[in-house]
Amino acid sequence: MMSFQIITIGTSLGGFYALKTLLGVLPQNFPLPVAVVQHRSAEESDIFAPLLASHLQLPVLEVEDKQEIEGGRIYVCPANYHLLVERSHFALSTDAPVLHARPAIDVLFESAADSFGEGVVGILLTGMSRDGSAGLRKIKEKGGYTVVQDPTTAEGRTMPQSAISSMAVDRILSIDEIGPFILELCAGQRGAA
Amino acid sequence: MKNELAVSPSPSVEEIEMDLLLEGIYRQYGFDFRNYALSSLRRRIMNFARNERASTISALQDRILHDRSWLDRFLFALSVNVSAIFRDPAFYLAFRKEVVPMLRTYPFIRIWLAGVSMGEEVYSLAILLEEEGIYDRCRIYATDINEPVLKKAKEGIYPLELMQTYTSNYMKAGGLQSFSRYYTAAYDRAIFKASLRDNVVFAQHNLATDASFNEFHVILCRNVMIYFNRELQGHVHHLLYESLVMFGILGVGAKETLRFSPHEQAYDEIDKAAKLYRRVA
Image 1 (tube, rainbow over the protein chains, first blue to last red):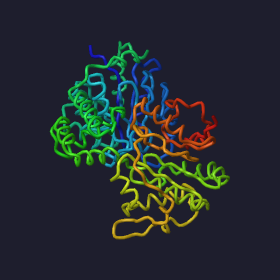
Image 2: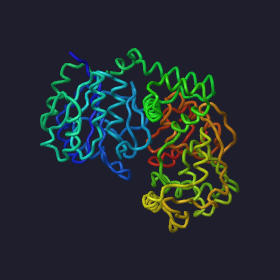
Image 3: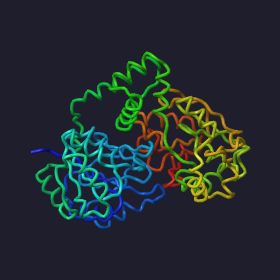
Image 4: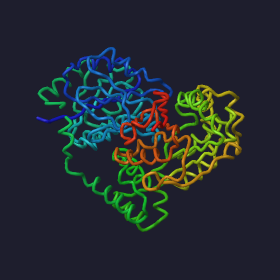
């Protein structure tokens, strides 16, 4: 059985509801870290993380630079930074936007694939952008596992559709199915120390 | 999890190439990127290789080590951050409220902006200090690792289309005037008033390898150390600490911490959200 080390999720338009649904399924003893990029405006305040947390069992943290990656936590990218994964911690950058987005999903996915290879699960959800497709391809290339929200169940179809058209994703699921599927996929993992 | 992560898988060819490139640049030219954060550095190097149509990092290394002009292009690609005038308006608002009153007590104020990239912070701070009536007493040292980037910072020219955002930032940052008085629009560009640079010294300085060069009342180093690993962050924090007068002010980026500073205990927090600290020991 594959041993996953990190779950990475990217979403844009309609993302809050999708994240609430998907992450709400994960129990307090969920073993893996979950890193989330949600597209949002540069000026947005820091309410996204606490707002999301109010719907979930797992703690939600807005990432600070070089913060350790620990299992059983949901890490969300701050507005106006890119979020990158190193082996034991996160890094932030203020590099140029990618496909008009900062944070960009591609940046999270690609850095996770570089750091964890086949240990990455990449999940691309609703959105009206093409961000995330290149990153998801890279996760797959490095042996990780890819899941895309069924575009017919997504508020923004462009983003999941773009990924599906450009690669053979491992699973296409409705937003209600993704959470339970992830639980199954990661069942039996030893998880966080 | 932590234990699993601590065991690094064997490095990829790409990682080996990156190590060799950075080692080569250090030994040939003295620029030390070996302790930069791996993930963001990798991204920048790969983007640079793609833009320059180098098929591998090794091909890039061949060019850079044998031709200084390639090093300059590489440095430029590695030192550009995409910031904004009055990025994080709340920071400047806190600076006005909490820091300016302290600065008023000094007859002469030395400020170091470390890692200014394209200079957005230089103009933001100069405007703020002018509006608070203390700019004439200030000398701002604006440093960056890269000379061509500094030249851009000195020009103070930004795309006109950004002025709407910058004006909004300025207002949220507590701006007291009409923002348009600080720049002249020409074609599709905005050129900031030269008088804003009257008390600014632009100088090349490498945080990774150069020493402290003065004592300052204020040091701002925002969103620069995010590109460094923890070890280099610790080194730079020591440099900044050494360069601050007692009761001097340190400002870092909104998502940075002093956790990796060997002098964390020597600072009092002035404003938690704005990441403004005061040296007290």
